[in-house]
Length: 339
Image 1 (cartoon, rainbow, N blue to C red):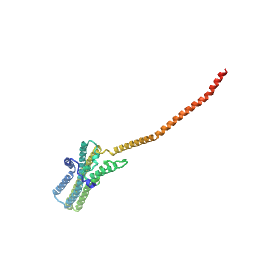
Image 2 (cartoon, helix red, strand yellow):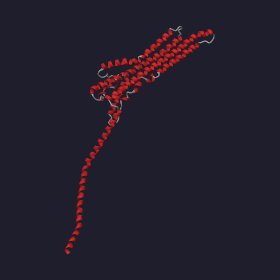
Image 3 (cartoon, helix red, strand yellow):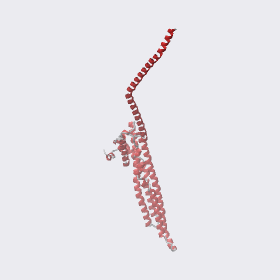
Image 4 (tube, one colour):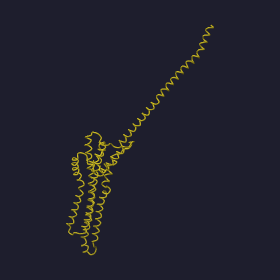
């Protein structure tokens, strides 16, 4: 089965429970990102109400507000899709945790042998998570086939904060609050410039007649600033909230995976080091035993030869001492005979 087909692998058992869990999670997560369209519609309604209730409807002011809301709406649609993408990853983490705990309750042991098989490749539905998880499993298999077995990798090397950031294009979404504020400031300057352009400093009557257009421009300036600040604050709050939730769910998944499936690579490396030391000690003992087996006969023969040499030396000493003491004994006997 190739990688593309593996990614289509369905999730493990208890799919009905997983769907029920996903439905509850969708209801919970939607409470965060659904505020984007709510705030947008609220601000749009406020803008329409302010323009309709205005005594003098200025087409230029309406166009400025319409352009701002059109640009903001496009940005919010783009951001909403990516926030939904974050939610999918968070849901996958929660469901994966439920599968891991359920499998551990059945197996009563570490689940690596089960989760390294293709039956668990479908533990994630989100594309980025599936790809990274499959890459992790394949890398672990490659390292396990290494004859020396000196290296190992960790799930966090493949599924981490950076993966979430890349999947949701965090760099671009981080620019949205600034863009909202910039649009508000831009609308402010455009409104002021339109109002000042219509202001006439001629006669008193001309000044009086130009006050209305000036005030309309000032209204647009302040309104666009308010819209921009509200959009910026709302999006920043929702974006950070959803992103932190995804990080928290990732931490929970990593913890449970290391606890029930595959321990941390740091512990594995420590165990591998101890295993290597044990192998080295066994090799040293085996070498020592082989040397002893080969040299022992020679050592025994050498010991016997040394013992023979000792015995021979002892006998020679005894003989030498006997020869030295014999003349003394003869001399003593001669003296006795003379007397």
